[in-house]
Image 1 (tube, rainbow, N blue to C red):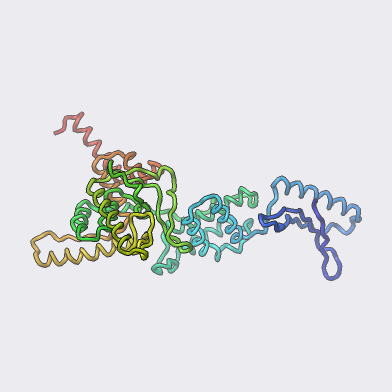
Image 2: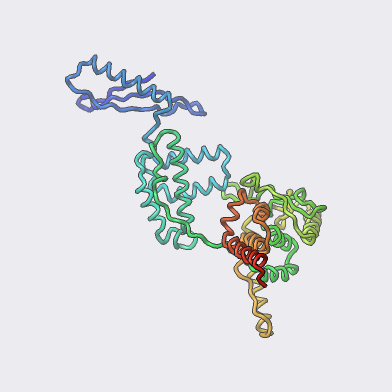
Length: 414
């Protein structure tokens, strides 16, 4: 039942009436802050009975609206409500890495609009925020500018939070839907040429076995680094020369290295690999067993194929770091070889990162006539349209080739 409180100033004059409706208790049994409606004083000419009658009428209507879910706490500010939404997302199964990203983005969002009441946020407030985010110095890594993609990530989080507020009838509309975030400039995927990959394969046998296998899987499967590090022995189909990609190894500042499921069911896939790579994997499994016997109690056993020297799971960043080291090491060797014999073609390995191998596989397959559906499934994209969008420039090139081929066939061009 609604309760009515009379609020007076120091002189005893009525300043307002406060109607409070019980909201319930939280999961810990603590009473939630009630719904509150403030009513201004009535005309002095009104009698006490008329005021009481009008207040009871307002209270009944207000309680009805609360019980029907048509009233919410309009006093909530963005920062506190954002924490609430993130807790909702976390409980509903949103990935840990995504939750961490949300919290990181809020470090820039809250100083600008965190103190605003949800009902007071307007599109122009958000546009001003996007302008601020476009200023130099906000990139903590290099002191430069944030990319358009990063600014849009801030916009999408705000949109997500305000969408929840709109669903809960806290706000009449989502201000982010009417704001104007920057447009993301399309960048062609970074991929390696066939000659570069052959150059890597040329020097790979001189590297430790573990890295031979990891680099080979990057080249021949196009898998993400976390997907490779999460491989276990039961993911290797030696008989059919296949690997099963069904999980990922990730890193969180909060809990360290952890295993996570893939984003979607379609991300789970079986990928065929050359027999040469299967043989390398078999050798690595044997090497792990020898190291286990050698180190004894110092060996921290786990189920993963790829491990640190003491048996612990590998950090995903270790692959990125190794790619950088590999590039520098063999570019130095290539430079020395060229200086000794300038008759040979000067070669070098461009910047390497794990994802470049993924783009390279897709690019090479498309350029050599593989259909987009097969490429999409091999990469584990949830939708073929994702693959088409990323590699649209290559598909345009393939389409041009198809047109030339049809012209040769039907118009008898030699």
